[in-house]
Image 1 (spheres, rainbow, N blue to C red):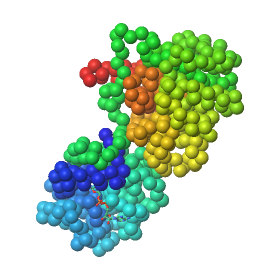
Image 2: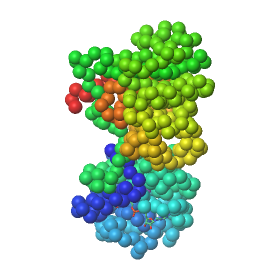
Image 3: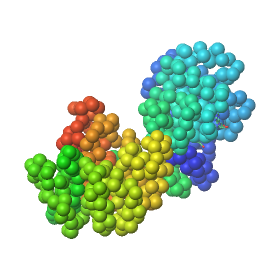
Image 4: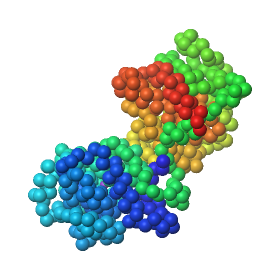
Length: 504
Ligand SMILES: NC(=O)C1=CN([C@@H]2O[C@H](COP(=O)(O)OP(=O)(O)OC[C@H]3O[C@@H](n4cnc5c(N)ncnc54)[C@H](O)[C@@H]3O)[C@@H](O)[C@H]2O)[C@@H](O)CC1
Ligand SMILES: [K+]
C-alpha cells in the first residue's frame, strides 16, 4: 500500500481522470460509496447523522455520502460551510444529484443557532469539510465549525483526512478536526504518520476507490506501508541442504562494563532470528556473565577484532562513549565496507562528525537511530526531526548512501535510492531500554539471510513490532514487556509467518 504526499495524490487523481478515463464524478461516487459501506454496519435506525460539507471535492464526497444516507434509516442533516452557488466541478455534480434525490442543504452562516443545536443532537458527524486540498490555516468560518465539531459529544468520522490537517505532514499550529475515526480514501497520506497530525486521526481505515496501480507508477510514488503480505513474500526460505555458513557469519561488537545487557539482547535476538554463526565482542570484564548466558556464540577479544571470514557486523549497543571506542567504531565502519554493517546507539554517537566514512563503503551501512539519535547526527532538535521525518530521512539516506531505520511509533526505513517504507507493527510497550538492542540483533541476522537489504531491514522492523503486538495482544500489557520477553516471543511470531509462506 502506497503512502502519498498531497501533490502525489493530486497527480494520481489527475492521471486516472485524464489518461485512464475514469472521470472525477466516478471517483467521487466510488469514494462516497466506500465510505458509506464502512459506516453502514454501525448505523442505527433514527440516529442523528450530521454531514458537514466544505467547498471542495472533500465536500463532494460528503454529498455522495449524504445522498446514500437519505435512503438509509438514519436522520441525515447536511450543513454547508460554503455558499452552494460557489461549489463547482465534481462536487457540484454530486450536490445536484443529492438535491435531486430529495436531499436538503442548510448553510451554517444562515442558521448558526440551528447548527449548534444540530451538533448537540448529533450522534455521528461526518467531517467532509476539507481534504487534501487545504492550504494553510482553515479560513475563519471553517475554523469556527472545526472547533464546534471538536466540542461535540458525537462520534466524529473524517473523510480522507481530519479537516485542517496538511496532508504532506507539514507542521501546523492551527485548529484541525480531532476525529474518532478517519476513512482515508485510496491510500494513506504522509500526515497519518507524523506525530502531531497523527494524533487527530483516531482509528484509520483505508478505503480503495478504484485507482489503478499504473497511476501510482506514473506519479513516481516510491513510498509504501509494509504489510504482512510483503513480509511473507520476502522472508528467506532455507535450502534443505544448507549449513550454518549459509545463513551468515556475523560479529556483534557491543556492551561495556556497565552495560552488559545490551550485548546480550542483541546477540540473543540475532540467534533467535536465524543467524548461522555469531561471534560477540564484549570487554573481557563482562565476558563471563555474557558467555554463561549465550552458549551458542563465540567470543572475540576487543583487542584482536578481525573481520576475516565474516559476512556482516553490528556495532554500537551499550558500547560506551570513550575516545578509544570511537576509534574502534570508525575502524570497523571503514574495514567492513564490503559487508553489511548495522550501526546503532553509541556507534551512531561516535560517527557524528565522521559521516563521510559511510559514503566510502561499497555495501551501504544500516543505521538505526531513534529521533534523539537522529537529531544528534543532524545537529537538529528532536522536534524538527519529528515534524519532517520523511524529508529528513530521505535526504540523509541519499546523501550518505545508507539504509536508514528511523525508529519511532511508525519506524521509517529509507533506502540509499530514496525509497521509503513505513512500518505498521509495534506499540508503546517497545518504548523501553533494551528494545533497540533487540532490533539491532534482528537486523544483523536478517541482513545476512535476505537477498535484498531493503527487505531485510523492513522485515526486521516488522518482526520486532509484530512480536510486541503479539505480547500485548495476548499475555502482556503495554507496561510490562521486557527486552527479554520480546526475544523469547520471536519464535511463535516467526512460526506463524513461516506458516503462511507455505502458500506463497
Ligand atoms: N478526483 C479527485 O480529485 C478526487 C478527490 N477526492 C476528494 O477531494 C479531496 C481533495 O479535494 P480538493 O482538492 O478540491 O480540496 P479540498 O476539498 O480538500 O479543499 C479545498 C477546497 O477548500 C478551499 N480551501 C483551500 N484552503 C483553504 C483553507 N485554508 N480554508 C478553507 N478552505 C480552503 C479551496 O478553495 C478548495 O475549494 C480529497 O481529500 C478527497 O476527499 C475524492 O472525491 C476522490 C476523487
Ligand atoms: K475531511
